[in-house]
Length: 362
Image (tube, rainbow, N blue to C red; front, side, top):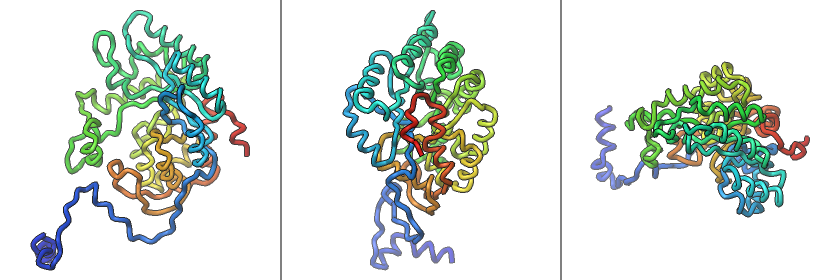
């Protein structure tokens, strides 16, 4: 029987049957499912929400009216711009916001890590953060460059938990602002590019994302550095971006949250992981409903529909919006309203200062 099937499916056999074998790559093969099940194509969130992970570069000169129009279509009441920079550029962004839409945007500051190791560097960095908060910043965003490409004045990699950075995290705690931090990337980026790597397609189409134990360090090393830093500063609230790169191991993530009460998470760019494990994800969202924030990462308005559908519906077997990122199907978690409200806005209102609460009056 096996031999018969093999012969039937060979190109020669198909030619005999008057058919041709189409040539296509994996990315091109994307047939619509023939499955007939209830569907809910959501383009707007059920409740107003706060996106705590967005990037709007050059916000000082941006026409915010177009941005607001797109936000309104999604029911996004507040966007947190994590790319606020520091100093004068941050001040200009805040001026543009206050002049036009003062209650719709929150700006996070960034740290310039150039000069780590110089005498007085940490004190200056902490002072700059305090000045940025005084000038309108309501949080601090740390990019994955810390741990990847940030070097000290001697050319050595600066670890995420480097003691020379402690004054920054301490200052954030004293200022009562959260620190959202992206450390490392998905663990498969460090694994061999072979038939066993679930991220093979993403790495093949985006080769710059491939990492190794020497480029710049092992994944486990980077994540361990982050966790040590979290534990070293219990008085500072940290937002682990991208579910701390444990969206595919929620039991482990739950264990980490239990160990580190000063840490919360957001799911920017990892909704595909949650959408393929709806029962486990719903259990996690239920247990940790006070410690999860809504985040998207890239600003592509039409992609929010996938997030709404995963969070709000019980739909089955629907596609993600980027096949190279997630070739599997999504399933809705179907969160109850009270948990949805916490994820969409209530948790962010508690953690991020100075958000206009009247936008979310029930």
